[in-house]
Length: 236
Image (cartoon, rainbow, N blue to C red; front, side, top):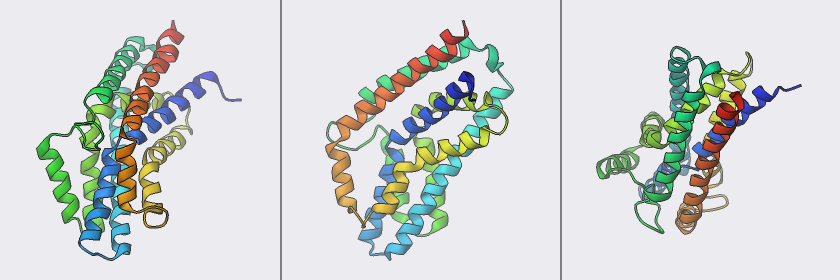
Protein backbone atom coordinates (compact mmCIF):
# COMPACT_ATOMS: atom_id res chain seq x y z
CA UNK A 1 0.00 0.00 0.00
CA UNK A 2 1.35 3.45 -0.93
CA UNK A 3 2.01 5.65 2.12
CA UNK A 4 0.70 9.21 2.28
CA UNK A 5 4.24 10.60 2.39
CA UNK A 6 5.21 8.71 -0.75
CA UNK A 7 2.05 9.84 -2.52
CA UNK A 8 2.62 13.50 -1.60
CA UNK A 9 6.20 13.45 -2.89
CA UNK A 10 5.18 11.70 -6.11
CA UNK A 11 2.43 14.27 -6.70
CA UNK A 12 4.92 17.10 -6.11
CA UNK A 13 7.37 15.71 -8.68
CA UNK A 14 4.71 15.07 -11.34
CA UNK A 15 2.93 18.38 -10.61
CA UNK A 16 6.27 20.18 -11.05
CA UNK A 17 6.73 18.39 -14.38
CA UNK A 18 3.30 19.58 -15.57
CA UNK A 19 4.25 23.16 -14.67
CA UNK A 20 7.53 22.77 -16.55
CA UNK A 21 5.57 21.59 -19.58
CA UNK A 22 3.44 24.76 -19.66
CA UNK A 23 6.39 27.10 -20.24
CA UNK A 24 6.85 28.13 -23.82
CA UNK A 25 10.52 28.67 -24.65
CA UNK A 26 11.24 25.08 -25.64
CA UNK A 27 8.09 24.88 -27.73
CA UNK A 28 8.95 28.20 -29.38
CA UNK A 29 12.39 26.85 -30.30
CA UNK A 30 10.87 23.74 -31.86
CA UNK A 31 8.55 25.93 -33.95
CA UNK A 32 11.56 28.05 -35.01
CA UNK A 33 13.54 24.97 -36.02
CA UNK A 34 10.70 23.77 -38.24
CA UNK A 35 10.19 27.29 -39.61
CA UNK A 36 13.83 27.76 -40.57
CA UNK A 37 14.03 24.22 -41.92
CA UNK A 38 11.15 25.02 -44.25
CA UNK A 39 12.70 28.34 -45.30
CA UNK A 40 16.01 26.67 -46.08
CA UNK A 41 14.17 23.87 -47.91
CA UNK A 42 15.97 21.18 -45.96
CA UNK A 43 14.84 17.57 -46.14
CA UNK A 44 11.97 17.10 -43.60
CA UNK A 45 13.72 14.03 -42.21
CA UNK A 46 16.80 16.13 -41.38
CA UNK A 47 14.68 18.76 -39.64
CA UNK A 48 12.95 16.04 -37.63
CA UNK A 49 16.35 14.72 -36.56
CA UNK A 50 17.43 18.20 -35.47
CA UNK A 51 14.21 18.66 -33.49
CA UNK A 52 14.61 15.23 -31.87
CA UNK A 53 18.15 16.15 -30.84
CA UNK A 54 16.92 19.47 -29.48
CA UNK A 55 14.35 17.66 -27.33
CA UNK A 56 17.04 15.26 -26.13
CA UNK A 57 19.19 18.25 -25.16
CA UNK A 58 16.36 19.84 -23.19
CA UNK A 59 15.64 16.58 -21.38
CA UNK A 60 19.31 15.97 -20.59
CA UNK A 61 19.80 19.44 -19.17
CA UNK A 62 16.60 19.21 -17.10
CA UNK A 63 17.88 15.91 -15.71
CA UNK A 64 21.28 17.40 -14.88
CA UNK A 65 19.77 20.46 -13.21
CA UNK A 66 17.53 18.28 -11.04
CA UNK A 67 20.47 16.06 -10.13
CA UNK A 68 22.63 19.08 -9.24
CA UNK A 69 19.86 20.58 -7.11
CA UNK A 70 19.37 17.25 -5.38
CA UNK A 71 23.09 17.02 -4.60
CA UNK A 72 23.13 20.53 -3.14
CA UNK A 73 20.00 19.96 -1.05
CA UNK A 74 21.21 16.59 0.24
CA UNK A 75 24.35 18.27 1.57
CA UNK A 76 22.69 21.44 2.85
CA UNK A 77 19.29 20.73 4.45
CA UNK A 78 17.70 18.11 6.65
CA UNK A 79 14.61 17.75 4.50
CA UNK A 80 12.76 15.89 7.25
CA UNK A 81 12.86 19.01 9.43
CA UNK A 82 12.72 21.79 6.85
CA UNK A 83 9.42 23.66 7.25
CA UNK A 84 11.14 27.03 6.81
CA UNK A 85 12.84 25.79 3.65
CA UNK A 86 9.57 24.67 2.09
CA UNK A 87 7.80 27.85 3.16
CA UNK A 88 10.48 30.02 1.54
CA UNK A 89 10.48 28.04 -1.70
CA UNK A 90 6.66 28.03 -1.83
CA UNK A 91 6.73 31.83 -1.49
CA UNK A 92 9.21 31.98 -4.39
CA UNK A 93 6.90 29.78 -6.49
CA UNK A 94 3.95 32.08 -5.76
CA UNK A 95 6.07 35.06 -6.78
CA UNK A 96 6.81 33.32 -10.08
CA UNK A 97 3.06 32.87 -10.59
CA UNK A 98 2.70 36.65 -10.39
CA UNK A 99 5.57 37.09 -12.85
CA UNK A 100 3.91 34.64 -15.25
CA UNK A 101 0.72 36.70 -15.16
CA UNK A 102 2.46 40.05 -15.52
CA UNK A 103 5.75 39.85 -17.46
CA UNK A 104 6.15 36.40 -19.03
CA UNK A 105 4.82 37.62 -22.37
CA UNK A 106 6.05 40.97 -23.69
CA UNK A 107 2.77 41.98 -25.31
CA UNK A 108 -0.81 40.76 -25.43
CA UNK A 109 -1.87 38.35 -28.16
CA UNK A 110 1.70 37.42 -29.14
CA UNK A 111 4.01 34.56 -28.19
CA UNK A 112 7.01 36.87 -27.69
CA UNK A 113 8.51 36.02 -24.31
CA UNK A 114 10.12 38.11 -21.58
CA UNK A 115 13.68 37.20 -22.66
CA UNK A 116 16.20 40.04 -23.00
CA UNK A 117 16.59 41.08 -26.63
CA UNK A 118 20.16 39.81 -26.94
CA UNK A 119 19.23 36.40 -25.52
CA UNK A 120 16.17 36.09 -27.79
CA UNK A 121 18.27 37.15 -30.78
CA UNK A 122 20.98 34.62 -29.89
CA UNK A 123 18.45 31.77 -29.67
CA UNK A 124 16.81 32.79 -32.95
CA UNK A 125 20.18 32.99 -34.70
CA UNK A 126 21.25 29.60 -33.36
CA UNK A 127 17.94 28.06 -34.45
CA UNK A 128 18.42 29.50 -37.95
CA UNK A 129 22.00 28.18 -38.12
CA UNK A 130 21.30 24.73 -36.68
CA UNK A 131 21.86 22.14 -39.39
CA UNK A 132 22.66 18.85 -37.65
CA UNK A 133 21.84 16.77 -34.61
CA UNK A 134 24.78 17.88 -32.46
CA UNK A 135 23.89 21.54 -32.95
CA UNK A 136 20.26 20.77 -32.16
CA UNK A 137 21.28 19.00 -28.94
CA UNK A 138 23.46 21.94 -27.92
CA UNK A 139 20.66 24.41 -28.61
CA UNK A 140 18.38 22.32 -26.40
CA UNK A 141 20.83 22.40 -23.51
CA UNK A 142 21.40 26.15 -23.84
CA UNK A 143 17.73 27.08 -24.19
CA UNK A 144 16.92 25.31 -20.91
CA UNK A 145 18.73 28.05 -19.00
CA UNK A 146 16.49 30.69 -20.57
CA UNK A 147 13.60 29.77 -18.26
CA UNK A 148 15.46 28.79 -15.10
CA UNK A 149 14.41 32.09 -13.51
CA UNK A 150 10.83 30.77 -13.56
CA UNK A 151 11.54 27.07 -13.12
CA UNK A 152 14.20 27.07 -10.40
CA UNK A 153 11.89 27.28 -7.34
CA UNK A 154 9.67 24.53 -8.75
CA UNK A 155 12.64 22.34 -9.59
CA UNK A 156 14.09 22.86 -6.11
CA UNK A 157 10.87 21.52 -4.57
CA UNK A 158 10.84 18.64 -7.08
CA UNK A 159 14.46 17.77 -6.23
CA UNK A 160 13.65 17.83 -2.51
CA UNK A 161 10.65 15.55 -3.11
CA UNK A 162 12.83 13.16 -5.13
CA UNK A 163 15.29 12.94 -2.23
CA UNK A 164 12.40 12.14 0.12
CA UNK A 165 11.22 9.16 -1.93
CA UNK A 166 12.05 5.60 -0.86
CA UNK A 167 14.83 3.77 -2.64
CA UNK A 168 13.70 2.51 -6.01
CA UNK A 169 11.14 5.26 -6.55
CA UNK A 170 13.60 8.06 -7.29
CA UNK A 171 14.51 6.96 -10.81
CA UNK A 172 10.90 6.21 -11.68
CA UNK A 173 9.77 9.67 -10.52
CA UNK A 174 12.73 11.34 -12.21
CA UNK A 175 11.92 9.63 -15.52
CA UNK A 176 8.30 10.68 -15.13
CA UNK A 177 9.34 14.28 -14.57
CA UNK A 178 11.50 14.41 -17.70
CA UNK A 179 8.92 12.70 -19.92
CA UNK A 180 6.01 14.88 -18.77
CA UNK A 181 8.03 18.09 -19.04
CA UNK A 182 8.96 17.20 -22.63
CA UNK A 183 5.49 16.06 -23.66
CA UNK A 184 4.44 19.25 -25.58
CA UNK A 185 7.71 19.17 -27.55
CA UNK A 186 7.31 15.47 -28.30
CA UNK A 187 3.72 15.96 -29.49
CA UNK A 188 4.74 18.79 -31.82
CA UNK A 189 7.62 16.66 -33.12
CA UNK A 190 5.30 13.71 -33.80
CA UNK A 191 2.38 15.55 -35.35
CA UNK A 192 3.88 18.48 -37.28
CA UNK A 193 3.08 18.00 -40.98
CA UNK A 194 0.86 15.03 -40.07
CA UNK A 195 -2.01 16.76 -38.27
CA UNK A 196 -0.99 20.44 -38.30
CA UNK A 197 1.54 22.67 -40.03
CA UNK A 198 4.04 24.88 -38.21
CA UNK A 199 1.97 27.92 -39.14
CA UNK A 200 -1.17 26.39 -37.65
CA UNK A 201 0.66 25.51 -34.44
CA UNK A 202 2.00 29.05 -34.11
CA UNK A 203 -1.44 30.51 -34.83
CA UNK A 204 -2.92 28.28 -32.13
CA UNK A 205 -0.27 29.43 -29.63
CA UNK A 206 -0.89 33.10 -30.40
CA UNK A 207 -4.67 32.76 -30.31
CA UNK A 208 -4.65 30.97 -26.95
CA UNK A 209 -1.72 32.84 -25.41
CA UNK A 210 -3.84 34.49 -22.72
CA UNK A 211 -5.39 31.18 -21.66
CA UNK A 212 -1.99 29.48 -21.53
CA UNK A 213 -0.56 32.33 -19.46
CA UNK A 214 -3.44 32.32 -16.98
CA UNK A 215 -3.45 28.54 -16.57
CA UNK A 216 0.33 28.38 -16.18
CA UNK A 217 0.20 31.04 -13.46
CA UNK A 218 -2.67 29.21 -11.74
CA UNK A 219 -0.64 26.00 -11.73
CA UNK A 220 2.30 27.80 -10.10
CA UNK A 221 -0.01 29.29 -7.44
CA UNK A 222 -1.77 25.98 -6.71
CA UNK A 223 1.60 24.22 -6.52
CA UNK A 224 2.77 26.75 -3.91
CA UNK A 225 -0.37 26.18 -1.85
CA UNK A 226 0.05 22.40 -2.16
CA UNK A 227 3.61 22.62 -0.85
CA UNK A 228 2.52 24.79 2.08
CA UNK A 229 -0.38 22.46 2.90
CA UNK A 230 1.57 19.21 2.87
CA UNK A 231 5.17 20.23 3.57
CA UNK A 232 4.65 23.10 6.05
CA UNK A 233 1.28 22.70 7.79
CA UNK A 234 1.42 18.93 7.40
CA UNK A 235 4.59 18.82 9.50
CA UNK A 236 3.27 20.92 12.39
